[in-house]
Image 1 (cartoon, rainbow, N blue to C red):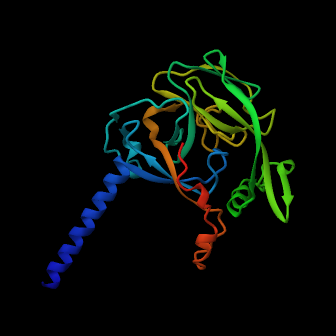
Image 2 (image 1 turned 60 degrees about the vertical axis):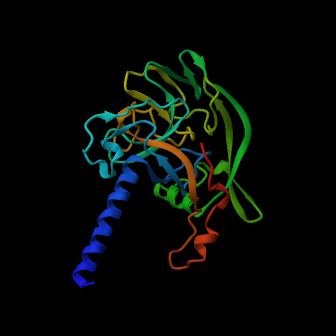
Image 3 (image 1 turned 45 degrees about the vertical axis):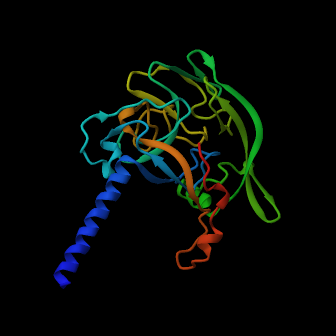
Length: 273
């Protein structure tokens, strides 16, 4: 076989591989990593997820780099309350965010003293055992980027045992109509968004919230760059969070391969939603 033929075969293979990856990431599944604490307790900084692209249909935001290859939205489907979704965040539509669906088109959402009022009925919220998690390197790095905040949000939520620092947060179990349950954190009783007047969600929009209610810029806040996201158009949906494929505490060094294994949080791998 000539060198020219080998080169042609290799280039053909690369084109086929690129096409396969493009189709896989655009229409089937894509990876997503967690950079913030807004979805604690279910998601921690350093979690890596698989996101399903097919559950809600496709738009330009399903495509890598939001390539404008799909006009409007095809095969559309509205999420269910309680779904954890990845989407392009308003107002810029440049960043991928992950939040939980709380309100659907036609719903009336109100927040009173930190409790969600859905269509006039308080969403069940009961206190359960505190969430206790170790302070990790990626938590420290993230909070240092946020103007030097404590890795536990406030110093009163920090504790130390046997030389190890931990965060202890008040934790609640929330149950939506239909039975979908999940844990949330509500660590500050007078948080910035603990009270919000009723709002009716228009057609084609969603009301999304982070499970960490005091650390999430979500639909409780107007869509402003560097701030909240307002009501999110359904066409902004990228996909549905399916399960965790890897998790790291941030202590690994690329130059020290054995730390890739010691930094892994193996018990979180395979967790679904």
